[in-house]
Length: 537
Ligand SMILES: *[C@@H]1O[C@H](CO)[C@@H](O)[C@H](O)[C@H]1NC(C)=O
Ligand SMILES: *[C@@H]1O[C@H](CO)[C@@H](O)[C@H](O)[C@H]1NC(C)=O
Ligand SMILES: *[C@@H]1O[C@H](CO)[C@@H](O)[C@H](O)[C@H]1NC(C)=O
Ligand SMILES: *[C@@H]1O[C@H](CO)[C@@H](O)[C@H](O)[C@H]1NC(C)=O
Image 1 (cartoon, rainbow, N blue to C red):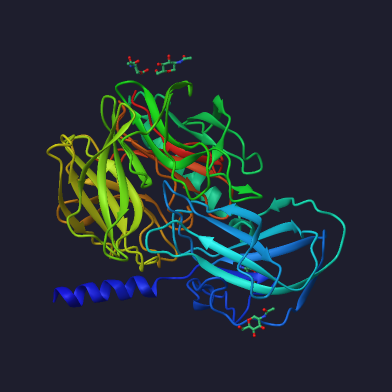
Image 2 (image 1 turned 60 degrees about the vertical axis):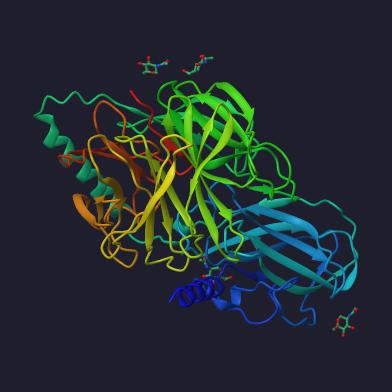
């Protein structure tokens, strides 16, 4: 039985879903981009995905500006260690020496089932070749995903210019749908008014709380802003500026600038500081290992250190543990091929200290989704891990660790969650509750879909509806919008950001899990805000 199980796991990883197709210049071999997970976008053999060399069908002028287009056919963003897509050129048909022309960092879209076209305008280098090869790669940096490769055969004839600029313009999913755009927004405003009126009779002092986050514009890759967001008006205000961006979106080489890791943070409620991980230098294949401690309310750098006692495996997530201490989660390769240990540890005084890991390495539930400390029992941490081969069913498990003291910390168990009615990408601990809470748009397949708050029992795996948040036809089925540590505030609300269907408007919802009392902010736009957090008040 044991042997059979491990054979099945290896097979599943082997089958793994697919990721990249080169549209223009057209890739070698067949191409079908009509569906996510197309086998024609799943090619791993070096150097060109195992496709036979073809006669060049496209010619470029050296130094000319050319239009390249590709499709990410599924997304495999790895929290804490984002991957990249790059384009290179080799000067003969059999060469394996590729010169990089463009690099695009992977994007956190909070889901795997995601087809996205990318276009780039690239200056062709000043070379001449009867038969050059353009190679597209997607290195997702994700456990179980080896690099995806496609090549196209082209000719380059001599020109003059040697510049190598890149303009990056992803085609947004939203822009393609221009169906009845205003209707969902109108409904959202009616919903807001309804809940507002319900409350007006009560004496609840509804003071505006502030969320904090990082505003980032990929066209200014070298900086970002620490900002606050008023949870009633939705207004944002700049608190501080950082001289680095998030996940370094674009550059001409595989060396990348300094960048902060999206969604990897913990707030120290004892000190009013927020910990971020920063990649300071080196290649994109080097993991981030600088810890930046900034004031949660002022965004100023308070402390900075290299993580020491650190073996170099990427940290996927942080979560506050106790005063001065964060819990950390990592996925570490095991001796056995295609399997990984899930490990929790602590960051104390800038050093990483391993706590506990799962006893048997895992090969299938390797899709990291969320990491949370139990606020009622500061022994426990929960890691939400998705099944790598269920990008739509979103089968997931909670791995439970006791991190009481690193000398006594241990793995407790994992629980398979019942996702037959509700799916989600984050889980939130809440004062006074043994259950975790999650914001859920129901099932991936539900069309139209409503929004709910659900209770997740980490011990049994039961997932039950707690509150109805919004009926169908108002908010997008978007799996982002989670607020880190959104529990610890006087008013007892949990916070989440919802995207209005067919519109650029976002609405912050807050809800009390006990009473289902909720309210909605004025419409705002937070699409450019990352790493949302709720400080203690
Ligand atoms: C490339 O490799 C093929 C197959 O090995 C061979 O037939 C061809 O001559 C090679 N071309 C060059 C330019 O070396
Ligand atoms: C990507 O572009 C192709 C044409 O090159 C188009 O047929 C397809 O619908 C586009 N896909 C998306 C997701 O925009
Ligand atoms: C943290 O901030 C809260 C709210 O502003 C304040 O009450 C508390 O005294 C602060 N703690 C420290 C250690 O500065
Ligand atoms: C920013 O906030 C932190 C944490 O509360 C504090 O230690 C630091 O002194 C503050 N810095 C400035 C410049 O106000």
